[in-house]
Length: 444
Ligand code: ZN
Picture 1 (tube, rainbow, N blue to C red):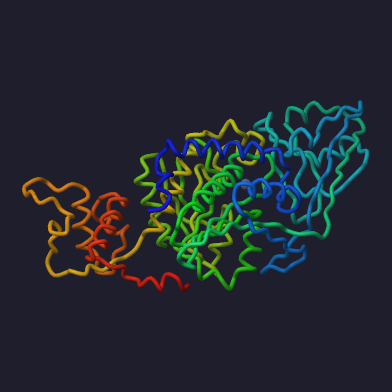
Picture 2 (picture 1 turned 30 degrees about the vertical axis):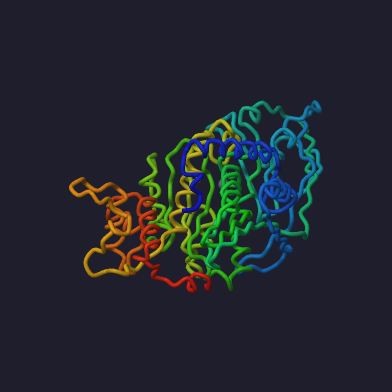
């Protein structure tokens, strides 16, 4: 099985440190759905894994949408009547509403006030606000700071551009022995927010880096794209190839202290849904399964009825279900290294099972074949068989071409690793052959 090096929590902790470093580097960048922030983010990821970058021109039609104008910003601030900068993008990338149009003006507080966003319930946090599809401008600040503003004239500067450019996304493809694909999607459009979206970017990068060192069966395609419009663009450009997608996962929000949560695909009973459920149940940590809903991240597009791809979503606490969500309090303090490590191990576990979940044919199906003479079964009778011997018997019994190794593991209560090891051993002594010929694997 692949990714065995990520099956221990100890090994994943070292990887969590690497994820943390990448997140620290990405945190200050002012990202949005287009622009230099996304490119700088992909530059940093591209130092760790090979990326193929795609730039799609503004105005390109993509299903019912079109690629938006590209947004970039150099500076943005508000000065109070005494010339003091009371809000400054330099101090936190959340201070500016994403996609704010340019402005230079002096305004009385009453006119400025509708453009200032805060969170009265959590008066020290800066909210995260966007205005991608309606041209507008705004600043976000702590409610406590907003309350302190005195009447008078305020100077406002947003030195931004919103003009024809490109939407940028990138892919890392890890070739497998098959052209069938395992698709992994993560969004790269949030500014200084830690759990929601830096943990997803970092763990996706590390998972890709490990798969590049392995020899997987599936071809793995990692897509780093802005949320929603990025997956719409990707689907529009790859519509002819999506029948290659055998499994998929949307990854994000993987570092908080909540239980690991798998959201089923729209199909509900796709192989990925069963594999993820098994990985969570056998993972030895708190977890939960939730059903598909057309709300969340890029599963909304990937599981839209015209595609209905077998793609689930792995998070810890889902979007909008923790108080710090989409605010400056989604920072490093709510991310835990052990939780990151556990999330990575879960991803690796799902991938390794999916990559090995074959069906087999027993080549000696009439009564049990003699395993002792093939060196697979201890010759001394009487002792209760161990896990491996049990696994041999289960795999032989169930291998009529209909049961996958996951079916065998679930029905027997044995670990997937033991069942897979038994299948390897039985193949080595020619008692088993794959139910699907190797050729069917290599043609989509
Ligand atoms: Zn978000």
